[in-house]
Length: 452
Ligand SMILES: NC(=O)c1ccc[n+]([C@@H]2O[C@H](COP(=O)([O-])OP(=O)(O)OC[C@H]3O[C@@H](n4cnc5c(N)ncnc54)[C@H](O)[C@@H]3O)[C@@H](O)[C@H]2O)c1
Image 1: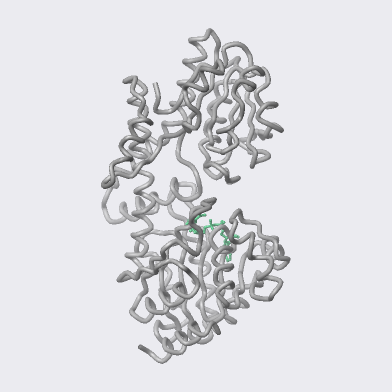
Image 2: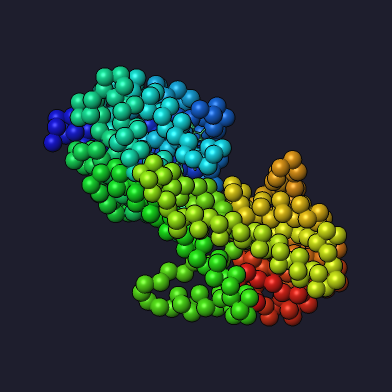
């Protein structure tokens, strides 16, 4: 072990090391809070002035129960502060954790400009030996072949100036059971000393196990595998759901039955599409890398085709059901319950609801929306304001689509909802949170994804 590594290891163990978190978003804020809670002094860096100001006032703007609970006290006690200046944050710290966005560009390819910009900025500000950790999601090779050379631009050298690690972020937005501190952490460094430092740091701030792997690329591949696994499995159940609707077989019941198998099966559920920040985006990072290597990831392409078809399938089914009741989608009033991409969150990024709204507008339906967490969404040039309540939103409507599994929709009185709607109303439960029986007893024509 080098002297630099030994000295930083001591500073980590004694909590004297200072931590700089670059990118104060959904990933960076919980990480800053966990580091500060473990006893490290933390400086957060963000290019957005408003976010920096809010953090310095102790205001938690990310929807994360753990951060909301602890951030105000940690800021007040001086454990966390924020700045817009990367040089200020980086020079005063021993550990720099990079959590900036890695979106897709207009062509649907990886946009690494945020990561590149931070790497270049850091190369100028590596005064003293530092542990640099990349947490932003990307394809294998990003840390070693793209980030590291930029870090070395100003004559910096690994071992002498920095240790470098990739550690994928696995935080599941809105998950009440698993948060930043109890999700196991995978760590892969560019050399043994880097891995050792990264592992020691995460062991100090987390309650969860830390798993070390042989290189940053293995850690990056781990993240790609996890999210492609979800993307492909969701596509699988979506495709089979559509088939079983036609076969007249309740496929959701089949999934629940399959889930009783104690090995070799993990339940995924069909829905109106795939949304959220990560799952619809991350697979296309590996698709890009594969293309560079002369490979086509056929399963990901097939999954994309299936997942993209789900909102279209949903609206087609609704149109057919309306027609069977002698109504037309073009003249019907359709209410969409749920704008967020999953239950109990307010995040609408890539939400399937947005796609449903687009398709309904194209069909010239009269549209209303309600989401207890979201006040409005903009799709194209149109702003959809959420109604004040479930009841207000359905007045004189012909059809109701449950698009998000918010718990409020699980318990709302369906008979009362039906009584406010027009004759022969349709309830389309795309999330399978209500039973056929209760919907039909309330007087609805019942539709549900994966159910005939
Ligand atoms: N959101 C999730 O649930 C999640 C889960 C796992 C992994 N990830 C990955 O983590 C990374 C960050 O995601 P996020 O959801 O926190 O994004 P986010 O958009 O919520 O936050 C990123 C922050 O970085 C800031 N930023 C951009 N450029 C910067 C720069 N040059 N210097 C300093 N700050 C800068 C932005 O202003 C923003 O506040 C992405 O790679 C994402 O794919 C996200």
